[in-house]
Image 1 (tube, rainbow, N blue to C red):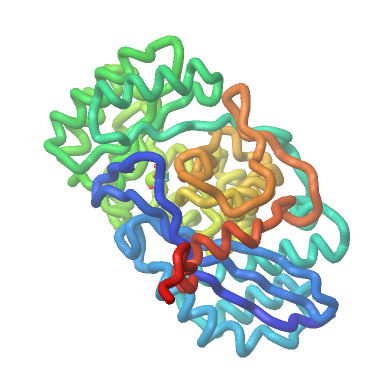
Image 2 (image 1 turned 180 degrees about the vertical axis):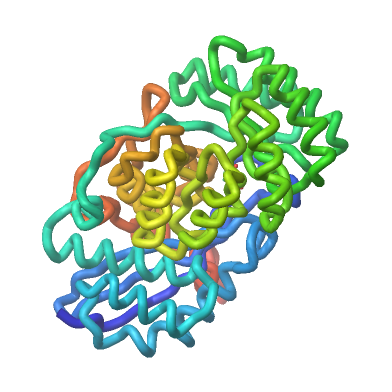
Length: 380
Ligand code: MUC
Ligand code: MG
């Protein structure tokens, strides 16, 4: 079995509403879709999603595409994609960092190999230990009343009973008031957690977390800068409320460092920031050894990336702090022929070989950035 080609396509899909984060507000999500083909024509698909271009981390979809096309593809084509570990080691040698790019390729290779064997992708990661994962929704409309109304609608639809609030953009005490009002509003009906996306210094975090804890907020995600592991350790020791590492946790080496410093109570896993499904499994193994529960994070993927994340998370016993694989629900449209299964407060594993999703060619043609505009009315 030989890898014949790797294709990368930039895709932009609008969101259903503005999504506010500490570093900006987004109305469109950007993706790189990766399609790998073997010599028999079997296709595997992967995806890298970024939030706000290179604002969340260093990579943007444009750099991801360049890294794959220029520095990975020429060295991977012709090799046996079943050698997933060897491919991963090779990518590590060829390209330092740029883990989103490597992750998208590794996802596509895993999908390809699983499809060619006629098995779901999670089988190649050891098989599933979950059939469903509790699903959080992010309330990030920019207004407290609008967030409460959106949360009520989500509860009514029985889609979510965990809400993550994106804070850190505004005055810290105004953010605390916003999150406290929402936590108190949903008390006893939904769990509320906040994501600060690195916005606070340690003193601000100490003051704000005390108030958020008192208001019943259940978890604080990445309150301080990702490099400030010492501050995370002091916050984790000081407060009962769980401190979750997101941006601070990329590689398995980061996981080990966080464990050694007792700097997080929960790990947010994401395939892209880790560098792929294999590195995500290694990170989860470190968490398991340290007794740290994992949360299935996201970067607002389409159903392509979401399915890849889901197949990995269902194979990780330690994913017991829920997940936020709601990306497709925040998008105005999707790329796949069949929607994923969302109901009763959870995302449920679907059937199918590989990641179990198929790209709808007309959707890809419509949302790809380099599409040739089709004129509805041609001038003579
Ligand atoms: C993050 O930092 O967790 C994913 C969903 C969301 O609302 O924000 C993200 C990124
Ligand atoms: Mg986060």
